[in-house]
Image (cartoon, rainbow, N blue to C red; front, side, top):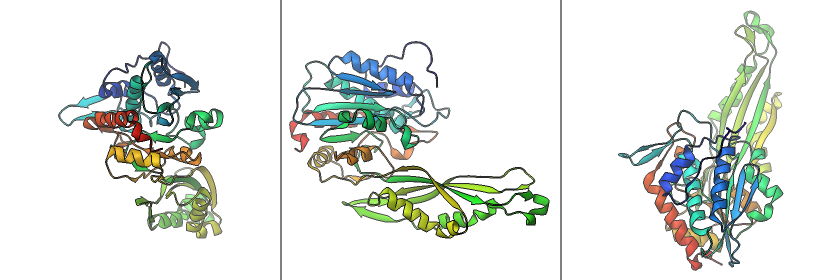
Length: 377
């Protein structure tokens, strides 16, 4: 999409985290339309004077180079799902809530990151660790467009560190690892006919009944890994079929999303999906993989990760969803999710964040990044 003309909005990193969250939310940035917000973030980071800043597409990276013995990578995506009448932001003071698209997922986390950059990214700042900040695009769409994936291919060294923290919404708790995700399209064949003479055709929509029945009866597996409980899910997320109001359809496509526990890899997840639909596949249904991304094991026993969990002071839990901790885990870098947003608010029309979650998240990270004992190394 073409960015609007004119300079980007100015982000004041000295403003409190609530004001900064509102400023980010008020710049629409649905996936593929992050340019204006990325420009604003880049300008704000460059103005600090203590960071090396680079741009890769609509991903903005910044880092300190203070020769500290350890490095912490902080990452968050700039994009949101499409706006649904929920921009600009609004505050419900009585309820203590900030409403708006992306408030929880994950502009509140981005605001915390920018506040940390404003504190530690100026000349003379003395964090206990060197810091890398990654603000990336296209997280809410297929993995092939993900800005962090682009950085991994083009500037992988920027992602290396002793610990990576994704400021995804976790409601102020540490969430370990993440589920993998697999999307497939099951194409049910049929034969077109006039609906007045339907016996001359084969109705593909009717043929999808077995697939839907298998999904409705699917027993979700629960598995405990490193003390964290993961629950899998297999669901139809889209169904397409039909030609006209008087035609027996000759095709029906069912899109299925499998969220799998991180003890399965992508090949095992696909094999499981094929097993679930073995009867349909034997009857002529075809299966096409349209998106796949592996999960990440919790890794909370790694010293740096364990030190952060201890610093937060709340029990860790499993991340039910896919996040880019998986990319860091694939590089052998301990990674976890921690942010002020509520994951249950993600992608909802009335998305909001609790205002009283914002400052504590910033304070916890400031304390960890300031305390030299927090490295766990």
